[in-house]
Amino acid sequence: MKKVSKILAINPGSTSTKIALFEGEAPIFTKSLTHSADEIKKYDKISDQYDFRKKVILDAVKESGTDLSEIDVIVGRGGNMKPVQGGVYEINEAMVEDLRAGVMGQHASNLGGIIAYFIAAELGIHSYVVDPAVVDELEEYARISGMPDIVRKSKDHPLNQKAAARMAAKELGGSYADYNFVVAHLGGGISVGAHKKGKMVDVNNALDGDGPFSPERSGGVPVGSLVDMCFSGKYTKDEIKKKITGSGGLVAYLGTNDGREVQRMIKAGDKYAKLIYETMAYQISKEIGAASTVLKGDVDTIILTGGIAYDTEFVSWIKERVAFIAPVKVYPGENEMKAMVQGVLRVLKGEEQLKSYN
View 1 (tube, helix red, strand yellow):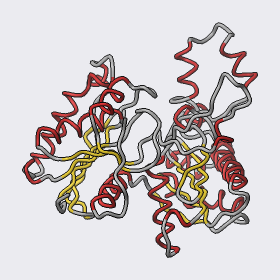
View 2 (tube, one colour):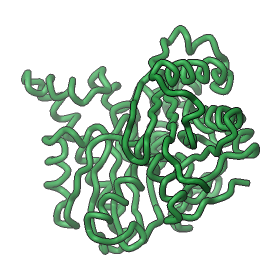
View 3 (tube, rainbow, N blue to C red):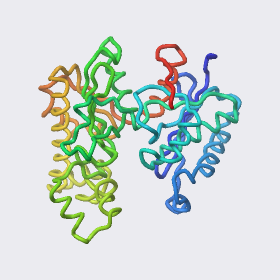
View 4 (cartoon, rainbow, N blue to C red):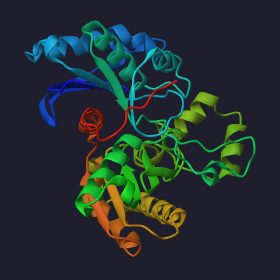
């Protein structure tokens, strides 16, 4: 492959599309394109948003003063395709069809690969996804649920988890495959993964609301009570799902999904808000402890990342419970755009092998 100078990264979310143009690892511009609820409501399926989202992306690139012919590679956020090993995948027709169908569920990130593929095809360049949400490197133990009808799935935040793990490995003087980490992604959803020598061998299914409760998700709740609620006649299936993912966690208890707002409530003397927020840290700490047993206590570093990791008090509540296990490193934010670009660059530099999707 030729030497790459400019990489366009595309990361669609439920109500926005983030784009960034990089030259190597250096960002040239980044932009978050917000979509109104009324605009999104026009489309029955996420894949129906393709033309609309593609247009706003191309318009934004042109407004930045960038000629499309300057772009060498496009990387899209990997969505809910079939489960894959972690790594960098060239987007092909099979992947596009699976993303359109949402074989592992409908999510706005499915559009990342689709849009990247077709813009790249028009420009005659390559397109990739990096560590999509359905990365599945689980050990067989981690798949067994206790009920043969239900298999545990890996649906979480591998892009940010693995990027943070690579940062920690570099600081320790080695590579991702040299170490054992427990990584906690602290965002709207919360996932805690056990990383063994470069593989995420166990993790809670954060996308479906499993594990600790989070700003928007209920986490694992008492099963018997959930069954009673499901058959109470008070709720539809969609309403129950919404209570688990979307209006659970902090939203359900405190009416907000914003940790900064919760901290303002606490500073104003709201003891209930402090109890709920500190309980979220408590549940995350329990999950970190559980993940450390997957690694038999051989944990080189515990890593906290994601937007909530900017909250130093919240981080301190976790540290005081888990620091006995291993040193704790904190990498605040969700550096998804940079992580996608870094993945592509590793392949182009020959540091990592490109994988095929089929």
